[in-house]
Image (tube, rainbow, N blue to C red; front, top):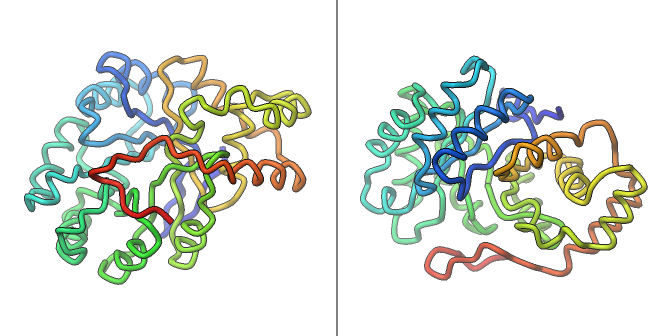
Length: 274
């Protein structure tokens, strides 16, 4: 496993995403993922499966201090100034006393950064969150959030994969001593038949998905959280630490990002993307 050392914490660069996992599947996959070696789990209030993720965490034999747990505060709880109470409920659902990382799920322009980030900072002081960050923020919003947060932000979680160029966001987060967490890192299956990725995979005896994930985490200051509903896919995604892409491989894949395919873009939530 490759780890990122950020803000005094060692974080596994590859995690299990739980977006759209049905209840029993979420429980099964979280437990199974931890058992096969995952040590990073990503969840969110709006996924409507936090309690089932919590059962998976409890059923695993992996001690709480040995895995990194992220969740995200939904926009309604930000707008209603209900961040702290909602997080207390989240912790009950996840059956844990704290999360390692707490994110604001989407930018909410009608709520001042100072207000929402102050609430997150208070949760770190009370021990309910070890680190805080943001999700789906554009470059200017990242800069504004960093300027208004009394506690350093750890990550900006955004869509990132071989079909979407995020160089401007990457530059911005690196300038602010943050990392990027890539969700939908496999473009929700859209890259599976890509001939370029297939050719590079054949060279390394790896699958398209393994090449795409390796490309992400090999960039440095990038983590990836692919969602898996099947154990064999979770195993495949984890098997990316015994090979390395060459500089030419990386540059070839970089060219694919010019496709600019975005699979997550809700009109009522998305900012003006960079």
